[in-house]
Length: 288
Image (cartoon, rainbow, N blue to C red; front, side, top):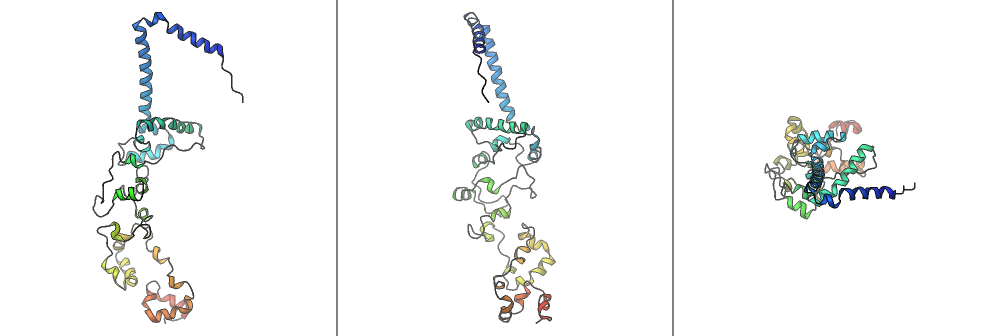
């Protein structure tokens, strides 16, 4: 589609009007320059006012897709923090750079164009550092060892890698703490230690867990007092199935043929860790 050519006559008319306004006679009048200053000042105030308004969370909430995140933010620990403090990198340059991108977001909403990418990005560490310091080494309760600087500098983690979606989504724990599953992404025993005491100061392996018969009797303990197990394992919804759905290595090859040798060596209790008597009866017809 060919571009429309600019009308030179129209351009000339604009120049003529400007010459009439900014003539030598008007240039000598203080009232004229006072009026010009007033108009320029009004435009500047309007621009600054618009920028200031777009900095407020209430402006973000004018978009219907922000209703849910806004309502959760209002009740969060960050309710007094403006959206741009977290979602725009600090500094005047970054703020001016963000404004045109923000207009793309507004345009995408108006035109309902899903092809436009979201311009709001998760907070960077420098945003978090405006209010928070990375000097903390333990949790507020004192139980969790959390050397923030080591995780950020040595591991190269971002704050949001652990503290994710804690402002715009409902956190069932009602605390800005990472979940155990988040920690286990690194603390898997390979990337980082996965022992209890690697992170916790008060949650070492209980003495009864060290007993040779613990794997046999633990089910009766759980049935008698589920809260006893949930103190440590409750962070997993179905924590029992984590072990019980995992087949032991000894059961992989020729186990049906060789299991009697294993039982003779270790005794029947080795089976009773996972199986009830009905398991034996299914094949043997009796309890061997």
